[in-house]
Image (cartoon, one colour):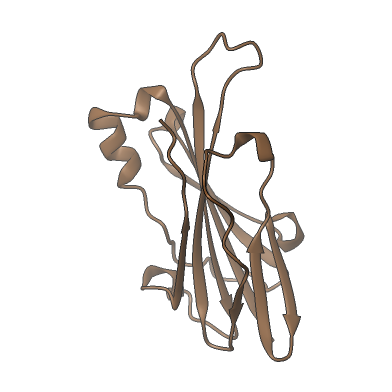
Length: 158
């Protein structure tokens, strides 16, 4: 069965935690149209950084490089994003269980992180990972609509 992976990473610093910069960051898309010619062996990866005004940079990468565990069993796809590194997680009660998708379904899973510099000299930096994963054949605009399943695993970033 076809598996389509889109991985969006948005990264920022304290400078985009409020005001106009935060508005720009919060307006970044959580789904993009898939590029023509992509394969199910590749992941559609989008990076948006504060340094570039949150302009999206798209690439196709090997699907195995995406920070998500995918396993097919019993006609369903088990999806669980990897959490790396653990020290970067904001406080949260516990991780939700994996999602099991039936053919024709897709999940949007959001997970955030925060980091400080090694010596605490610089301020915090943050990133938000959004995984859009579909099971079965899909059109190029699938991730522009509402997902079948939405998992919001974002914790407070203070």
